[in-house]
Amino acid sequence: MKDKKVAVVGAGLVGSLHAVLLAKKGFQVDVFERRPDLRRADIIGGRSINLALSNRGFKALEMAGIADEIREISIPMYGRKMHDLEGNLTYQPYGKDDEAIYSVSRGGLNQKLMNLADDYDNVTYRFNHKCQDIDLSSNTIYFEETELKEDLSYDYNHIFGTDGAFSAVRGRLQKTPMFNYSQEYLSHGYKELVIPPNEDGTHRIDKNCLHIWPRGKFMLIALPNLDGSFTVTLFFPMKGNISFESIKTKEDVMNFFNTTFPDAVPHMPTLEADYFDNPTSTLVTVRCEPWNYEDKVLLMGDAAHAVVPFYGQGMNSGFEDCSVFSEMFDQYADNMLNFFEKYSEQRVPDGNAIADLALYNYIEMRDLAGDADFLLRKKIERKFSDLYPNKWMPLYSQVTFSHIRYSEALKAGEKQAEIMDEVMKMENIHQNWDDEKVIKKILSLVE
Ligand SMILES: Cc1cc2nc3c(=O)[nH]c(=O)nc-3n(C[C@H](O)[C@H](O)[C@H](O)COP(=O)(O)OP(=O)(O)OC[C@H]3O[C@@H](n4cnc5c(N)ncnc54)[C@H](O)[C@@H]3O)c2cc1C
Image 1 (cartoon, rainbow, N blue to C red):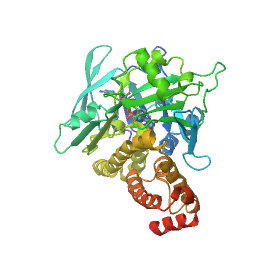
Image 2: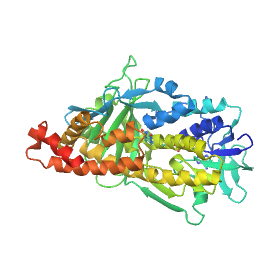
Image 3: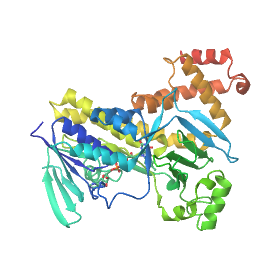
Image 4: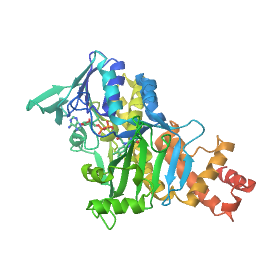
């Protein structure tokens, strides 16, 4: 592979990880990033933003040889803690015993991946390079060097588009025949806020869970950071009676939070200022097909499948793109055209499935997570799954703790939902849920 020159366009989470795995295969890798090097002292800083990393992500990090190091800078969250209007708490474990999702700093993870890629002699980073276009006949990429204001171009055997949801690389493929593309904005957006640490640096609320304030049509969530703070995110309608549009003044903010999230407010001393200082951002689902153009270009990560963040799988699925690429490469390397086509055929249905699952999970988190029927369903499912682990793995576990293809998990989840609908129709199920006949009913439906 030493003679093969490849470009990775976009040095975000997926591009940086993919660069490491390509370097390991022996490719000559140039990584282009439109922004300056985020490891530079004058760039570091700002708000702490975190992500939930889970098994699919860790698998790819293991392949890169950095999983243990990342685990050390992550905080395990073993379940959801739901806060109701009165401040009462309900806890729902994510999986079994020590199964957890891990809160990790987005910037910290990106920097570590960049450092790791930099350690390879066959990887070169070029920052301030904004991809403008690609000539697909010669596989030439055209860049604007944004500091020097120069136009530059480079040729490659293969180009990997990891330049995020609004990918310029994908933009070029969109102009080729038979390329399908769709983009759909959620009517809800988000705003990041903060719960700072206690004076002694400890966390103000339980750090080993993901906090949710489900409120039906919208929700607030909080994920812990290593410095004792929490990144808090308000997912909220963009327009309408109660929306980002309707909250205009500091008074509006405080009134809304005091009545809607009363137990969170005492932990958010900078709420008023943060609300107006921090941007309101949109959420988009992007689907496209195929992810390859011949064996010249391949899309990965958000460039191929941007999903809404409610399953905590955007980055994880992007990292899985990288691990699947590495595994399939070992099988198909002798024919790159066949490989790129096979890769796209396999991954597109999984990208679409996680997009669907993520959209569904918003409803589950904001609306159902505080609902007695829903919590009972989960309790019954868990009991059955503990008794018959080979017959039932909860959908959340399939998505988060397994490597089952997303498309298969989605199908299995639909079947499980049908079965649980039947179970919930049983007489006095809230009183009799622990009864043997409930288990028998599920057994008969599963079989
Ligand atoms: C609020 C929120 C919460 C989330 N939480 C989670 C979570 O808990 N777990 C999870 O797994 N995922 C989560 N995600 C999703 C996750 O952030 C994305 O899936 C992930 O960042 C995708 O990585 P990427 O490298 O594909 O794209 P990006 O992270 O967007 O990186 C793309 C890179 O390409 C660069 N670039 C863009 N255009 C060009 C160009 N023209 N030329 C050169 N470079 C370019 C960008 O500067 C950037 O560095 C969340 C997303 C949001 C919005």
